[in-house]
Length: 339
Image (tube, rainbow, N blue to C red):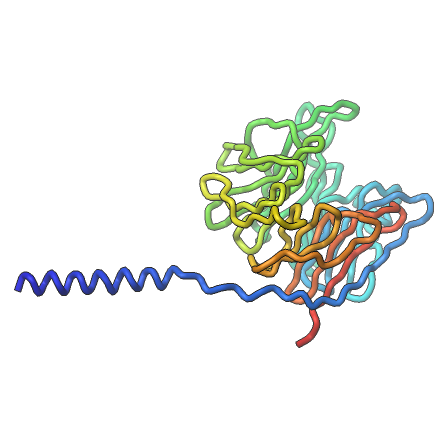
């Protein structure tokens, strides 16, 4: 009887073990499609205007917002795309727009280089700020990021005019008010931020001269986790990806190599829908695509101009191209062929 019990125990253990192994196996993701129709939109500025598109965000391919840098005329600070054409969106009170986040047509956020954050509720715009820090002249809101109207981050740097003195800043919005987050002072400019909701970890990309640094913020603790000349931070869903010099990493206690593309022309960026369907930049300013099996160059950009930002939808993609001539800005649009 005792021996039979042992046999039964072993059989159950084997079944449970086998079941566990089958349950953790992940199905292979479908390969990302590459059958795009490509279009370049050209936005021209007046002869005396020098401007560069900076940030892009949108809730659908028919509702996209873009901010513009270095404009002298406020009429060209903000642009909107309705699915047919790009038009300047004139807001007399909003100057020097920089960061932008669109969660829906009735929930749009814009940050400025004067430290203000504006919110559009579908009817009118309301200003928060300008935000100030003692000892500093102004705050530049480089970007705004979040997935919920009650959990947003605005990031950038506080500056002293005429001096190379600045420090990184982050403001958090809880659905009611914006508040500065506390962490050790660091001499850099935060230019990108993502939160991994499943772990509560906040990852940040900082820029200092020609080098980029990756940081992890947990509570009030800020830790550098990586750096490089070609370095980027992006997310697909809740997963955060870090690209440093041809290699893409994920973070779990430390940076862990996920995909090594050093044998290809891939340089950095992860703009995509899944781990087998994302775009990246090459070392000679060509837009490339990874489909789960290989990385392939997809589109030669005009005048070898790099892409500054991207917006990815289910069937359409948008890329902001740094202009070769500042009086013209380009948006590369790709649309998947209908099946």
